[in-house]
Amino acid sequence: MPTTGSPDNLQRVKDASGLLTSATLRRMESELEWYRGLSAQERSWVGLLAQSAITAFTQWFAAPDRPPHGANEIFAGAPPELARSISLQHTLQLVRIGVEVVEQYSDQLAIPGTERDLREAVLRYSREVAFSAAEVYARAAEVRGAWDARLEALVVDALLRGESEGGDRSLRSRLSALGWNGRGAVLVMVGPAVVPLDEVRTADLRRVARRAAGDALVGIHGDRLVVVLGGREGDGEGLVSAATGLLSRFGDGPVVIGPVVDGVDDAGRSAQAALAGLAAAPAWPQAPRPVLADDLLPERVLTGDASARRTLVAQAYRPLEEAGGSVLETLSAYLGTGRSLEAAARTLYVHPNTVRYRLRKVSEITGWDPLDARESFVLQVALALGQVEGPRRGR
Image 1: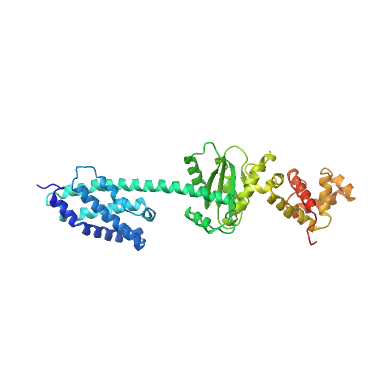
Image 2: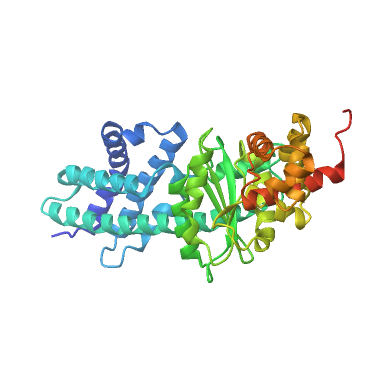
């Protein structure tokens, strides 16, 4: 009796390859919603994949005693884009339908008496196809993961250099390739990296960061860990909270959160502030962890950060200068007399309650409280900077 690998059976399977391919695609059309949603080009790729599978099966079927190495050939000619169009689960569904179609037509294909042998051969080969599919997708994921990691490092480096300013299209394209939403607030967080920060830990941090915020990038720069978080518009507080939740992923030492900015185009400003804060953080040993870059403005001024200097003058000195009513003079007297209400009152020839009232006005105008030790230091640095710059031009 002829065997399943006999020339007659083999020829029958070859002759029916078109029939099997068409039947498989019809079943997919009727049963698989994801297939119906593919573009015409993607459908043609899937059709070629199905046809390639049947061709590879017939080649193996000619000598079923040897290992079915031809299974890998099914995916060899598939374009790389196919792995992005259909998932491994989808591919396994295709294999399942293909097996069911061959079983359906086995009575017509096989020589009488060999139907069971043909079905067993198809099942054996389909198992190899499934393993091949898993291997192909795993390899594609590994390559894509390595490429994404390199691309992510380039994007983070560009943000640190301020290349996002001005809406660089190439940078936006890279962000899009990494799955960045592109909308909403952004902040940058920097601090010491855990040693050693290997690929496994980095990948885990990346997953945690992306669960914490709408968008996230992770970069390693020497011994520094850089995390870029993005969220919805007006979600600044949520981003700061998400950044704080990642604190345990950093190594020992200061961790600085840059200011929340309106979008990725301004991410460089947040990054520069965070880096400047990290450099200045040792000057404030009692700083919280993490600490906001804007809470390190005086220390950043000491390191030569021009942005911090401008911010302090603009947010503290100029509003007091414009307020009038001896508010600036009272603050100067209070700070210059060792933060004593009574001494400041004697210097100004006013009652201590008047000094206290004017200092409350300082807090209302600037947001920094002169009666708080830390915040009075911030105001003192701002006052010194403003006095060095002198009155605003045009006044």
